[in-house]
Image: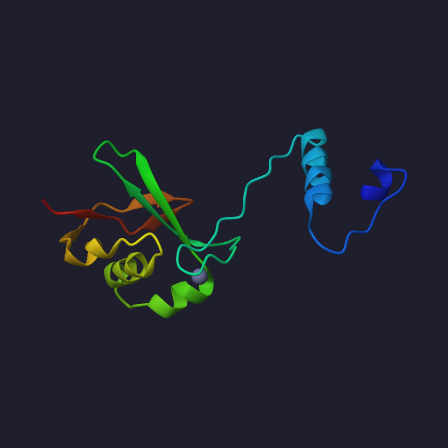
Length: 124
Ligand SMILES: [Zn+2]
């Protein structure tokens, strides 16, 4: 694909600004979009397929999105979705430890890509 589009190509050993610009221009030409790879909220490792937690306000608006890499998610793994969630948020670098004291109650699951997502709200 690169060879068809460009008369010559440069091999760059590592990712740098030039490669970034090249990829960005390829995306633009092909009508594609680039998304930043999310970073793990615990160890800051880039993780293309993270475990994602979205916190919303009362209106359902997403306010904080937290992503966790497979390794950190595995460390917090718990048979209970609720304990898993509390473990992840407690370990988060942004310090959501208060979640431990919150009274979480299960809300109606949300459907995403035909999968029901476990959903919790803080009981008031
Ligand atoms: Zn991590």
